[in-house]
Amino acid sequence: MASVYDRHVDLNQFMEGVKKRNPGQTEFIQAVQEVAQDIYEFIEDKEEYHEAQILRRIAEPDRVVSFRVCWEDDNHNIRVQRGFRIQNNNAIGPYKGGIRFHPSVNESVLKFLAFEQTFKNSLTGLPMGGGKGGANFNPRGKSDAEVMRFCQSFMTELYRHIGPDTDVPAGDIGVGGREIGYMFGQYKRITNRWEGVLTGKGQEYGGSQMRPEATGYGAVYFLQNMLKHKGEDVEGKTAVISGSGNVATHAAEMITKLGGKVLTLSDSGGFIHDPDGIDQEKIDWIKHLKNVKRGRISEYVDEFKSAEYHEDARPWSVKCDLALPCATQNELNADEAKALVDNGVQGVSEGANMPTTLDGVKVFHDAKIMYGPGKAANAGGVAVSGLEMSQNSERISWNHERLGEMLTDLMEGIHEKCVEYGDDGDGYVDYVKGANIAGFKKVADAMLAFGVV
Image (cartoon, rainbow, N blue to C red; front, side):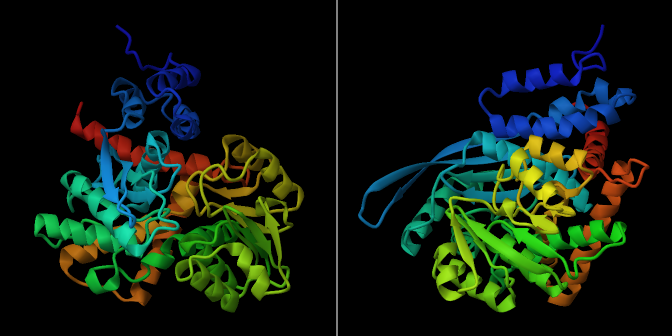
């Protein structure tokens, strides 16, 4: 009797099944499609993966936890939000992935992020499975006391689903050092245990040096590795970057350190274009604006007169050599990808998760542009989170220099894995295919070892 998932079930049939099981979950379906189209070719002659229905199982989360989060605002109004934790796959280690607080958070978004995280964590070589969580809570405009009360209520439910050997969340959009501190304090209060259950903590209570910089720096290191593979370098090249948060500002910082010139940064209101370049002094000013004043990127042009602000627009029309989308998912579509290609872009490295639409990825692929997908290019953040877990377990702290070297080595190793499975033999590396296959193979082989569980 033929398996319901065998080589005769083609990619379209597989995706129809995914759509039926996940109606209306467009982000999750997009993420599965992007991986499956590469994996199908790889597993064509590998009967063990077909018999065990490995891809079908990876595309079905181990656990979807949804819960109510009640909290009181400063005006004594009772507010109700919805919280989630998606535990996608723990074949190679405890679930690991961020917590996102943003109005756009829903089950589809978090399932896509947890699915992507499974492959990203696999690529690091560290023993971490894939998970993601969050709530449709917007910390913007809230007082510290309101954010604290929300975080405490959120953790009062979440704590029963996580642990240092079970599931180790981190930060993400809307969840920085402040929110991690409030959540860790509540976890410690409820459980009466100090343990490495969250990463991205402050250095005063078990956090790792290099964690704030890791995702942005890592995206640039991956870009540097792609350029080096082609005999090129960041030095002397121009870069457009989206976003102005932690990832974007640190990506800009590393581009500048390597001798490149950053032309743009953005937020949800629009983008700034500074032809003179956004140097370290300007980056520090933006960090203060965003992290301390919690202001908007439009304020940049009041301080630096060389810049222009483009309201309700994204930076992909600006002529550049390098592009780093570091804001959020689906922020770079096919038309914008074509504009980058027409303007001579040489390399794209994703600091955000799935920021380029499938049609946009096809544009880069068809034009043979060096394109580093998020699951590979932005894996530096979770890699250093994994190192924070190790430091917490051993009750030690590594210095900035050692962690910097480890991050550099990790990103080089991820690049090598992508080249191994993505080199087409004609000098072009399909980094999407390479990342998908390398990430999948490790998880799939672990699942085969465990049997049907």
